[in-house]
Amino acid sequence: MRRFLTFVIVLSSVLHADLQQTLQWFDSNVSFWSEARYDGDYRLFAFRKNDAFKEAYSCETNQNIDVAFVAVKKKFYWMFRSEIRGGLGDSQYGMVLHPYDISYGLINTFEYRFKYIHLASGLDHRCFHYIDQRPPEPVVYWNKFIITLNSPHRRDVPAVKKYVSDESWNSINRLMWSFGWGYYISDFFGLAEPRKIMSIERPHYLHDFQLSGKCGLWRWNSGAFAVTSATLLGYKTSGKAYWAQESGAELMIGVNNNDISLYVDYVVDGGRFNSKDRLLEYGVRLAR
Image 1 (cartoon, rainbow, N blue to C red):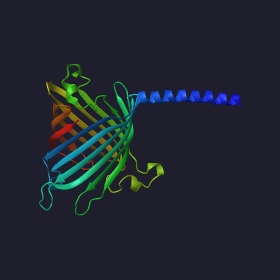
Image 2: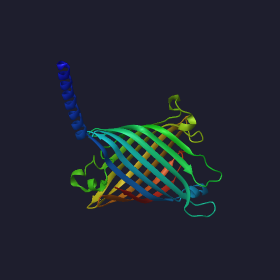
Image 3: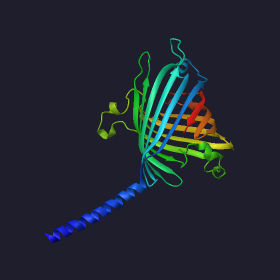
Image 4: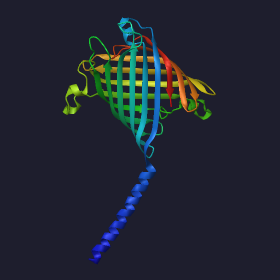
């Protein structure tokens, strides 16, 4: 009996010490809700080439939030991003700024941050809902498995502070970029009905590649000027390709811990969903 009690005491001491070490490591290396960022914009459209574009594109708002749920040793992150877009157009009944559609994006990724590149993978869910359309438009939605490579400072907010500091104004830090590949899940490996995973109405995508970037050209005490670009190339299940190219410029001003930007983008595309072909976008953006 004495031996048994001795064994229990020794085992308890070892387990207690291991538990203390585990808790200390957890406290030192794991953090929750360590990052939270917001960006939103209000944009207008020019060069609406026909009645359909006038009905769909008068102005648009975007509200986005980035959150790091869990961070381990400031290297491995569980990230969540929410995107909400509302589109307004000219109503067929003569109403100006008539609500046309609204879309939601929920993006969960696991990210590992190397010194010079951030690697992430996860699921991108999108759904598009049309408002007061006659005849009613179908709800369009999909789930996309994604892998992305990003520059380390892509999420830096406020970015203006980095741009205007002497030590950061170099060829590497002035360029923010992101490259991604996405695969559209159609049946979730046979575990779910296709109609519950991706809209069977339109469009039926297979996979796509996206490349975006921003490069600072000039700076002054409280702001910077940059050029921007975003390229999309994708394929549908039919084998047909679709693409889009956005090219623009951004004037960024730092106000306290916020970035306020005036921007302009010209869009050309070849048949992607919700085409904005030959539209000029211009507006104001806030990031913090």
